[in-house]
Length: 231
Image (cartoon, rainbow, N blue to C red; front, side, top):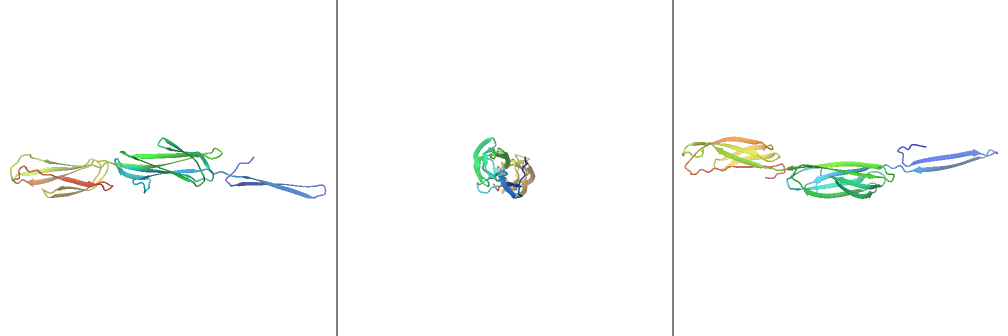
């Protein structure tokens, strides 16, 4: 009995020898070779926003498609059987794969929330040894939103009176907004706010002397960009 190591192939030789009554030497030898199996499997999960450039994580807008790619590789030295991919509870059996062979699966869907997709793969060799691997990729879904509100301290006044405005610029989405401005052409306001985090508000104050325009209707606009450049 012998416990095998990792020498592959394991070639074992044996020799017999002896002498007859006249002293003549006799010998014989034989060998036995054992193929040492080293089963191994790997899986990689990738995600893309354009079905072309692949990475482990992406950012998309709510409702956009995310494209997924699963690559299963036999990185061992023997055929693997009953190769089964479990992707979020969906089982896909791809049969057998030879050493150094890879198989790729694609699919896509649209998303409204952040999502991490975990995949695992299992298989066995001809002797029944079980191999396993897993991988994951994730998406960050942004729902950008921007609002602006202007409040005045009076609703009726005389020409020449001063009205004080309080202006609120609000990030109503779930992700940071960049290059945020508040613009009011009638009052000559071009206010650079910069970056607004999710849920953050920026407040500023403006004073204006009323003329004889009646009614005096003053409009203000806010603008900014999300991390993907959407205006």
